[in-house]
Length: 586
Image 1: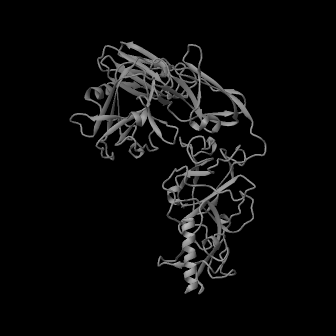
Image 2: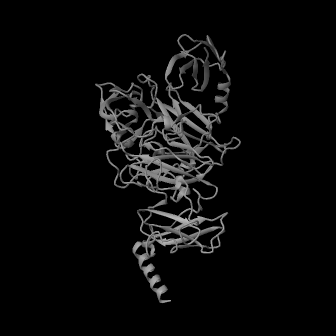
């Protein structure tokens, strides 16, 4: 009894010293339990009160009535990697488990030689870290698969003092407080003679796993820039792995690359950035225009670099030296009255293989060439319709967010008002919108909650553009200074409620033949005195205009129009508008 009391006192002292409880678990399903019980041995045992490490008889695991799960809680220091094995006995020999390759310290990625299991204990919270119940001799808990990640930082000048982390959509199911937490899933460098960092996650066998590596523990300069060839795609810039029933060790890749690190140094080049700001100059100039991008050398989409106006033009330019070859990802911004205004659309990407210059485009556009002429400021009324079948129930407040408000997006959210006598239909009007192209979105409730934003399926995205962070926004190109009404069903590219007169106008304008390979005729049956007609390409660039056209029909010759889809926007003298698609065939 005295000996037991002394041991208990020692363990209490140990617990107070380290204040970190860790619960190891093993699933013994299908195993005949040894009469000597189930044990765990590892390099943590002495710290937890055993006589030494790797003692197979001194750390017994117990079945707490939870099926075939055996567990033990120990007090050990955090911020350390621990090695261990489960034993269906109290001695080395036939009872010790055979550990699968994917679960061993050694791996093809790190080139080591160590056959034990391993775990990194990161938490310093005064709680219990509960490790998953891995199948005895297996790689993962029952019904799950193991996914081992490995990233090599050999080409990075230094490893951040806070460590190397992984963030993704699997974190919440692996002990983090949620998904996409940049500071909660630290990777382990298991051999100090290299810069390879690894982590094992347990995921569902049908999971689509998205992730990113970070040289540090915060979004921004620490996160890697992922080349498009190993992104998920479809506007999603994350790495992706489709899980199956087979546990997998992903091949070691170089940080910010799609392949292993090479021994040769990465070539660097100078890149000249340029952008035409003419379409966005709505406040008498800018306080500044900046370019920022992925990777530390472009400030990780952070502070960025101030660009210089070229003479008195609307073009801004800047040359940055010493950028790594490969994909350069970047975006332009302008700053006015303390507000930072990001251009719409996905990240710009340039394959940098020499000293190069970015092709001139308009701010927010990806079409080569200067900005098209921007019309004078105009009134735009936005309408969102919740009355269609399958639409969500409207929240108490509906908002519109976009890049044309001051400040932009969530910070400048504008509440929409229900149209009188039209439950489920909301509108908001802006009297003097200035930019030539705008991006926006509706939210069903608090605009600061991402879950309230429109969520578009993959079936119809004709009114959308990628937002650069894996989602989509609505977009609209202003072609006339006349008032315009834009109406959509919530989360769809399907027209929503319009007034009787607007609906009548849309039905009174016809375009035929469509598709065509020669010409089309635009017929006006609305009895208006004149019409303004604008033809735009898919990028929103104005191809042709017909102003104050007074005849009843307009013949649109193909001429230089290439095969593809175009938009035909019509506004009559009563400020009613309609937009149609025109398809040109070979």
